[in-house]
Length: 70
Image (tube, rainbow, N blue to C red; front, side, top):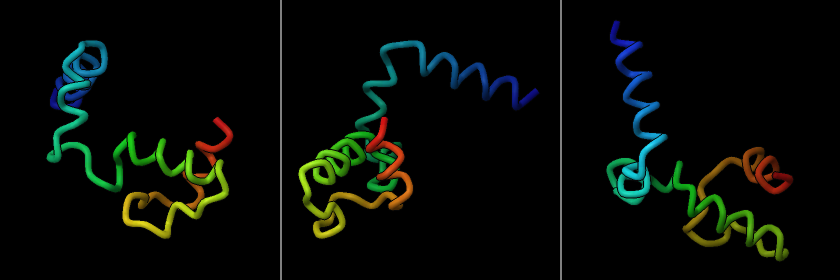
């Protein structure tokens, strides 16, 4: 039953406008899973800049290449 409740809560969070509010919270979005930092890393990679030189991108290189092609 707890998995059903968890799925329902996740479904509700994805399909409401509340996800934008919590996506910016530091408790939810960390440097390792932040969508904004992933987009920034892909942008740096596209422009020939190493995204790992600074302290803003912490994803794995495989994720960087995967999202580069998406």
